[in-house]
Length: 338
Image 1 (cartoon, helix red, strand yellow):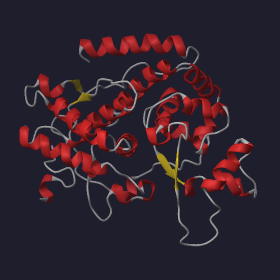
Image 2 (cartoon, one colour):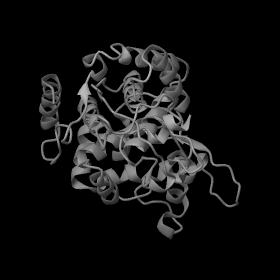
Image 3 (tube, one colour):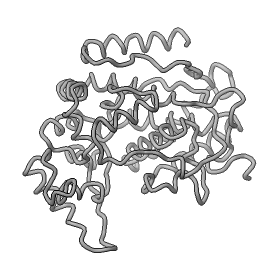
Image 4 (tube, helix red, strand yellow):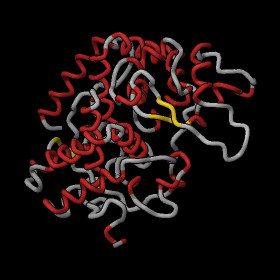
């Protein structure tokens, strides 16, 4: 890794060691690190690539701040399946975006627009995988998260299959969630941190109703939910009694709501038993995850530092570099598919 990369993560590691002292967690990218900070500038292939991306994201964000959760979910759905290879962007009757877990994915139009701009300025140079990671970084920064270095040099995958999508349900225990994250090379701090992306965005009531009316077949609400919060959520998510019933959207963090701003209220709501999704509320039941939740609820800067590192670690999962894959000229199809 280049010296400036090491310096950045050394500072992050120092800050995180002070706030999450007793959690065994990584403080750098997973080896081997194949990517590079400012790859396109270093190779003199598209010096202003990151500037172009940021400019387009800013234009979209000023019109629609919901692009932040859309891009966060998109990069998560890409990196956590086959690695950060932009395969989530590929069209097709059985592509990843058609998997049930990816229902409601958005943000594709933003990536398409950025790709068009970059193809006009630097044809065949900047990968869709890098665009997705860079655009997400810029969108979350505009929403109050830290701006962090995105290491670039990814290449794009050649296939996309709905059958390969193994994203877990949001109605799982913290142990199951941690097992999934560990299978991707991430750890408990990454889990508790990346779930903090639920500070912004919405989810369908169908992911919540079991907690409100029939938790684990008991015919009662999830006991980990505060009674007043159950009452509040039932008004927003009526019981599903018939086929074809509407499936409303609710904010994951009502305190952030339509402002789409990162705050520590996500973690304080977990402490108060007011998390919308079960996987979020589960953070208080693991020793390490509970400690991290307490630290982040007490200090937003601690969360911001950890978020920068964990997003970089997720963006490093199974990347394609060198002669692997290709640079898609259109993010929706491979170059042979034209």
